[in-house]
Length: 171
Image: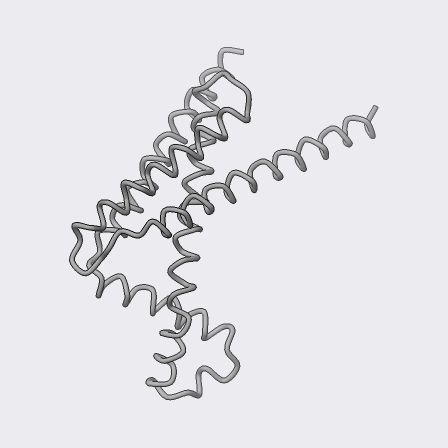
């Protein structure tokens, strides 16, 4: 029993570490000046187009760049939602290790914390050359965090149902 408690304690701190580390990653990405951030997302757009657009390899570099620019906005917004989905999952997992309350309260706390971090991140961007803080990005980030929490909830339900089914099948 003591070994189990020790492992739980280690996991609790490990997820706290992952949460803080992910917040630092978000902060660093938000610290990129606009031109660096644009180049990063355009490279991601080119990689996506390389996979999804038939004949992309045969296009001229200018045509490839044009396609990457066309999908840049959705790539950026999807990146916002994804980074906050991950943050929401990390925060909730951390709170599950530290809070002794119903799951719903932990999930709402995780959503609130991720949303507040999104708001402070947008304020931070006001001080980065060429960047701006957008309320719409805070909403996208909050929606991403909500999606991450929903993914955890559904995953937890599926796993618990399968475990319950296995217990019934074995008995």
